[in-house]
Image (tube, rainbow, N blue to C red; front, side, top):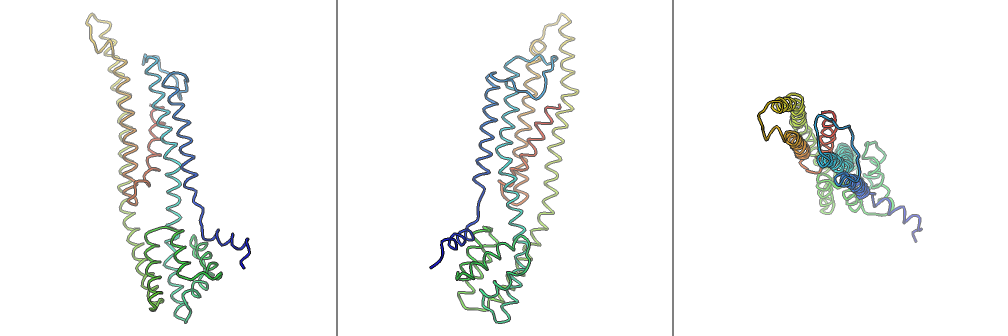
Length: 313
């Protein structure tokens, strides 16, 4: 008869807390709050601005409201994608750290198996080693085996906790080899070697792709600098030309509505940077590991840089 506290401990070893839902809900909550602030600024119920109004721009109340709305809406998007993007990045780094030491563990289990130990005994003996981030998972497998769980089932539970294609493939090979009654030690040695080679290939690919990711960030910053130059040189010249035309007797529709034209140009700049930030971030994530979700942290950084830059510009 298993004691209730022992059964609860066993459940805790089988299951791994997944904080994804908590992080997503936190991001959604921040998004809702900031989006409401953006909407209230749009309908002019609030006046939350990060910088003062330049009198030379001669903006109307509606234009100021739209400007504040876009700023707060961008911050809402930043709050929505930021927590999940960085949480996912941390989760993937932990998984990579686990996978990095997996060949070492497989090699030690294979060496123990060559001394006549069964797969279960080899896992328990190898659990005394140090494998970095992988060590807690090995301890869980050893504890499950010591409680009577079959080695193949403990490996399957380990695969479900880590949830990576590499781990699933390795566990599937080991389980099938164990069920077939073959020499598991030779299989583990082969799998360990192949896994190490795959990791070296992945490292080479990441080094190559990091150059392209750097190019994406540089191009985004160059785009911001271009907007700053236009705002500092071209738009003031348009305003000066409009004032000179206004002094003369020549009537120009552009001169009469120039503040609106300049405002629309700035809004177009902001929307273009917003689209670039989202798209370039997603592209950087795809180049990094082939997953769109991994690009959310890059989009977060680019949008945050865009908001700060436009407040300065």
